[in-house]
Length: 294
Image (cartoon, rainbow, N blue to C red):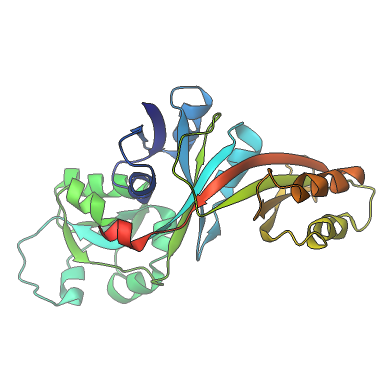
């Protein structure tokens, strides 16, 4: 059985991996920090890692993208999108608050959560918890664990419902994120292609480094894809970390390497002196609400 490293337990990463990968062919190994997740697969302790790489409202997770680019050699093998519902969890304090959320929140003095999760709940925090101490932790599952082990009803966590079930916490408020259309994109990275069900489409991710002495090189790169009618779903500049003003271009392409047009486009942009690094060619899994609710 293949081993998969992920941030967990009780995290959105774990929920999403279970939803798309299941337990039949994979054994999930939990780590507290993302560098440990990357490291486990890079060092051969696990076969794959699951990495959150982009959120609907926060955009790219720059630290994770830069790790893939600069620090590890782990091709992208799959991608999926998962809905993020953030919930305020606490120990049951025996209070008779009923439906009075403001009254219940007035009892809370501290909230644990991942920093990205807190950033997605600013409206709720300002309205109901302006007085609390916010303490970022390595994962939302870790936040729920700290609430359980602290045995203090005045401490809460912003975390998935699954974390509340795992650590037997009360859901004080559900779906407290600022935007309900909140999704995170995850990638499965590892040295070998896994055996997975067929995705909804294929995608290829590349890094392009432009030649320094070729004016208009980026225009040439984009034109090579445009005239072939190859769709680019994302283009993002990332620093090469070699000198100020030097950038890679991280590009998602809605095509497979198996097509005739894509390798030809690569040849065209390499001909003007660009360097092309293929980060992965992989299936994309669309979110299936019926499977999730079932």
